[in-house]
Length: 370
Image 1 (spheres, rainbow, N blue to C red):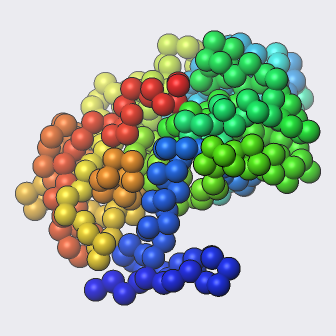
Image 2 (cartoon, rainbow, N blue to C red; image 1 turned 135 degrees about the horizontal axis):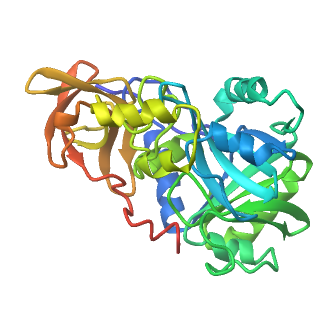
């Protein structure tokens, strides 16, 4: 039995009682997720790894590192993956084109040393490209939810309409007394903006947004809520679904890979792997029968078909918007079709699981583009 419930402390804080099963945090994470879906939430993601890549050779150099096409227009964003020579995924970056031959790169905070080390070692010897570290100098706040435009509009004169400020675009705007690069992108699948700002403006920016959002239901949300929200969108993560062990195609990154754009690291191996047949397929699963005394999938659980091991879960959790226990997984291609019945072993117990279409929440991305 899970005796893992606690009452809030005197000041209202809830301390997590750690458990392999659903903890006392479960209820509160759910409240944060539902608030992002119904109203608006604010998250601090300043831990993102950040750097500027500039110089006359910047565009050509990055183009040879990334499998995706770089953003063409100034003020546009693209999700770009750096591959290994064998076509596995080394790193993932959000790339913002600030001006010609000047790019701002954002990647996972936990992989800063790895990602930045690789970029620096790959710099051309002729000095045509400069790397500038920015993680500690720049903060990031994420405003997400259906009311986010109304909150932000109270604080800026910028035109926030879809025509002027579409999905995957960014621009420098004033937000109250602060200035930030507002980028229309997020990891939770709702309308929203990331604000990339000089770190010394962070407290003022946070206070502005919380004040403006007061009557629109704003409340902060954390990394556990973000994880749940992102799993409902089938978003992949380094080093789970994206890894040097799986080719970019096996991880389902087809729309971010352009072998016809010209040569880039891993291109030839990737094309060859597709011709030879892929060994794994990325899938989204609905897990049946999980209760509060159980655990949702966390990652690395074995997946079976009729008693045979056919894959492993890479991530998972409860989706509070779709009210389902979900898992992301890599399975053998023969077991990847929508509707396939599988089993996943969680804490020694087998649960039935069904392969479902990607992005169980808002598959058409209507919320993102609202």
